Length: 151
Image 1 (spheres, rainbow, N blue to C red):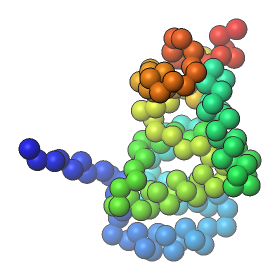
Image 2 (image 1 turned 45 degrees about the horizontal axis):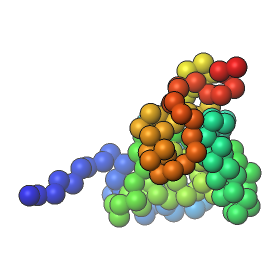
Image 3 (image 1 turned 90 degrees about the vertical axis):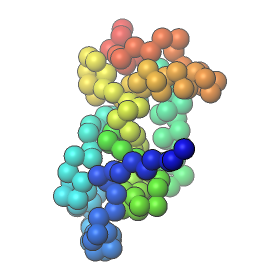
Image 4 (image 1 turned 90 degrees about the horizontal axis):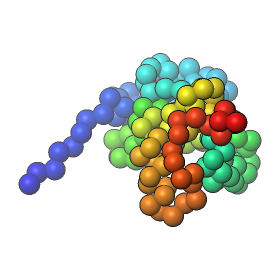
């Protein structure tokens, strides 16, 4: 049996060192965002104001993390891919920078927009089931509509 390694278009480019140097000179998160969009133009998929309140642990954990690093929560940023492999140093550095600026960075396979307001991140059915399996208190049924839009 052979192990297949999947290639990612978000692997470190040949000029990673130069990009990291450029990142270190970014004065604002807006500058960082422009750099991210230049290097990985389609990586960022969506931005949400927060997670669905039916999953209070998501917003709570995000708030706790932000408090520990001394920033305010800003937005939930959904991206095409997250990787912790060695050949994704640049991607990991972008995620770290965004996280330290108050963003909750999550994969698009895990969160979708609320089907009504589109401004709240709702877990996908797969993530909902994974949370249930791990004993996390979640709504009985996963519905693609946030709690605020259900009332």
